[in-house]
Image (tube, each protein chain N blue to C red):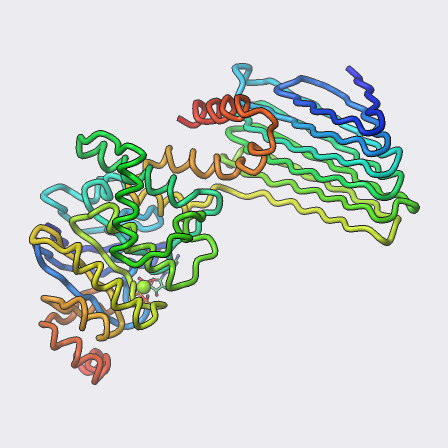
Length: 217
Length: 248
Ligand SMILES: Nc1ncnc2c1ncn2[C@@H]1O[C@H](COP(=O)(O)OP(=O)(O)OP(=O)(O)O)[C@@H](O)[C@H]1O
Ligand SMILES: [Mg+2]
């Protein structure tokens, strides 16, 4: 399904994609419009569920702001494949992306992030971060950042890491009477915290934490 | 309280503890000294149940129970506390949340109800004062960005919060400035009761001026090779560990 959206000058739009299967978004931003978008995949009863999400954001005029955040906690044979394309066609824009995946069992996920700043798009700020934790040896994460920067007066960065839960932190907490399960919850909550706090709706934050806790407990 | 008999333990297939014996009774303070790499931190880790170590022989009883079959958190809830030589940073987990979880898990184990928010904050205030812990530190993530000395002080703060019956202090003095050393040692002494005991691992006599040991042990090559009173620490400070090589 392709969703095409135009954000009119000065418009602010919030979009939350929660366990949404196969979606394709094309969002065109006009002058000074702002976008806050969340992609969330929470534990789900269908062990073989797959989510393919593709999001293209284009800055058509100056002064646009785009913030995209995502968190995913996958298990069993679930898959989540996320592609983002952020195109800074004009200068004076801002975009930031932070996507966090936690993969358990034999789940698989990928993040492809294309970030393009065209030659005339000066004074752009563009950031992209992808952090992942594998809870099992069979889980697989693929990260492909793709930066194409043709303007010279820009601030841009990207970073990607994939690792495990910190064993020494788990042991430290256990030494302080905290069960291993609770310690894992605390670490995962800490991992997701910077995404959770960007959600515009507090009730939703709580529901998500609840879901994560249910899964780990 | 603690009885260690003929303890052998390995890490990554390498034997580090090679038949260690030690008995600690209520009310006692035991100092353990010994050269770098002798196995002092290994002993702390094995006693607290660190999963990287394997016990290959021997037994350990803690308050009458078989320690070695207990999980790390069970050992802690039974009253064993380790002040880590290298405390771990846990970004994103706040000190308050961490401490509240720890204290309430211990209370649950003791059959006590969870502390109310007010009572918990009161307890925090009281214990911060006891160890001279800065207010701003408990507002941060656990140990994140703490200086070496702040981390050590935080260990003793946590000890004060959890009121363990056996505390193992692994080089808690290293990294502390002279004033902090005195304050932390006074905190440790204030927590001492006739029913608690401590194992104090240190390289320096200085700490033992404040926390006066009943026994001083020398741990070398995975065994306790010498035991004496507090004067042994002075002798070691003076003469070093050269005697280890003189004995067959
Ligand atoms: N993962 C590991 N693999 C192999 N050897 C290890 C490992 N961890 C520790 N050791 C070894 O175990 C030995 C004992 O180390 P331990 O930390 O117990 O010494 P220590 O007495 O506490 O020394 P220090 O006074 O320097 O703190 C050392 O030789 C150390 O190199
Ligand atoms: Mg050591």
